[in-house]
Length: 312
Image (cartoon, rainbow, N blue to C red):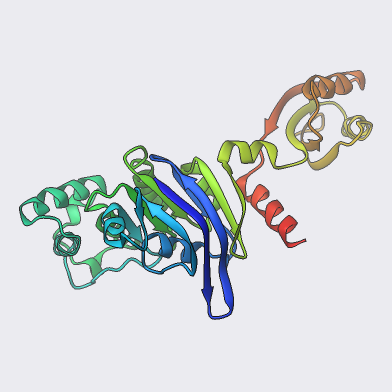
């Protein structure tokens, strides 16, 4: 669906992208992550034919971005960080304008507008001028213009930037609803958004890919220690002593719910049967294990670890 091979981009003497290569399959939702200036927006602009690469090749839906740029644009919907909206137009007028720009046949324009109004939950505001809409509705209008020509690929740059929690949830559900219908590339600084929506993560640092993995694999194998939440019954001093006796265990947080009930967060190197080992050591100390559960690392923890390792 999307293929890049050693894509490199220079702005003067500054190398913004260096030998970027990856493949994205049909129906995937892929998160682009990286610190500011990493090259994410530059890469997305290359894939949308907004910018040419300095060297390397890329294709979308089998069409080369240089040789067949018009074909690529017909197959791509793009939402930049600031949606290209005309505030004095109504939602309907703007979507009609977008449909005309994208060469949708005149007799089919109304069908396409009605479809995106429903998909993006804009039917009730279609006659309102864009300048009167909330930021959340403006983002929906931006997404609607990106999908009005029914593209196979959707590229979204910071689609929830500046939204409140309710609006973020609405836009997130909208994007999730596009899953399987389209291939989606999503760039955002809100890492929880990637966790909620993406199946795969590509992390870019200083113009280079430092990791490209399925999200579930990245979260389970990137940290050197496993994290557990324990609820232990016993005197606090006894519990602390029992935990300190366990080799390579790191105490992250200790919260007493009562004089004899404590919630403890620990890290320990992954070992076969580690849960049974923890329970056995606590019981031998005379305490009672009320609960033990694994605490999965967040994408934020993994991201910061990978970026810091790259900087070192």
